[in-house]
Amino acid sequence: MTQFRFSPPGSHAPYIRGGGICLRVPQMRDFEAWATVRGESRRFLERWEPLWPADDLTRPAFRRRVGWYEEDIARDASYPFFLFRESDDALVGGLTLGPVRRGVVQACTLGYWMGERFARQGYMSKGVVAAACFVFKSLGLRRIEASCLPINEPSIGLLEKVGFMREGYARQYLCIAGVWEDHFLYALLKEDFTKRYAL
Image (cartoon, rainbow, N blue to C red):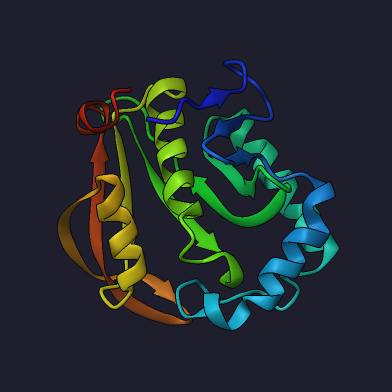
């Protein structure tokens, strides 16, 4: 398994590096790259996401987003990451781990998006494995949950490839592109991940 390097525990700007990719918390300096990748991939992404706000790709909206991210990390509520290709620092996608639930649950939810021109090249698979290492080693959680539309075959393939198990079917689970859609429910347990990747 790839050995990932993590930011120091308690860091306000977590990062994960290894295997040719880097996950790090979004910063204002990422705006141009983010707006470009999201803008050129809009048709590719909109089918799988909630409705985009009218000002979604503007600098003020991104500044608000970065502020929310900083607050969430400080509260241990969620951990948003941008996914970069290490060879040239190209922004290829993003992942979010949250909401984080502690106490008797010890879990978080995984969501992700990929720029169209970077899709099907293995970057997100590496990103999800890196994020899982972070969840289980740095955050100390026991379970990562995910969901996807039953027609989203690439996402189903990705989740199952990295070890997520399908656990159920939820009717009208999320509002996607303005429509309440049914979803497959998946989860990855720490003990299964540890066996598979020798964590």
